[in-house]
Length: 249
Image (cartoon, rainbow, N blue to C red; front, side, top):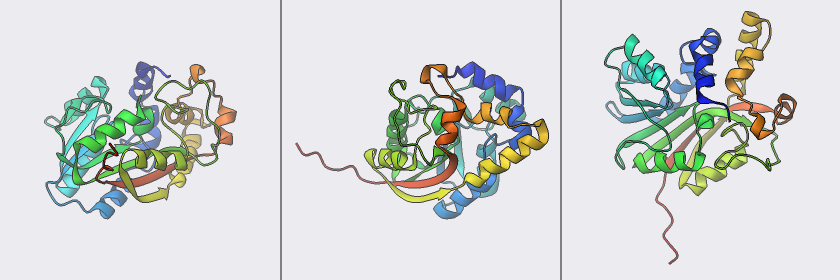
């Protein structure tokens, strides 16, 4: 697994920011707007941005939609950057696998290009379910693979290959397993395509973008050629919380 301080170094050097802007992700605020248009959260709705970085989306949602937003990120460096730039911005250090939020408090949980970087997808989804209200929605935009049909034999426990990135079928199955009902799945691969073009225009190749979006680990025994065979793409999904199935006991 790629070391977290390596990931921060890439961000600190501003490589991805030079390509994608302050959101540090494919699609930027446009995908955020699409999700907000579908969910139509009322003003002052409680939103949790998991993997918020320095809080670009937190500020965007507060200023443009009047939402009550809390941003959580595992990197104290990124949290400090956000608070230094915008004093009072509601950001705190934390992990998606262990959210310090009471049960049933959130109208929406947002994970924009952060779900695939978290260590345990099952714990993250369980925590997202726990903190959502009964009518709450989970919003994820992230990398996936369109043609990934094999499972790595030596993947780390709690991970699929390339951290949490997986196929559409696997992602939907995992949502169902954690009592979410899929409402929207949209392929947004054009967002990655645009970043590739922008990266080549700025740096002469896509290598810097590749290193930001696809953190290859030697422990996972995956090379660039294999990943390309899996046809990486990008998606936006929205899922609603549903009541868990009653116990059979």
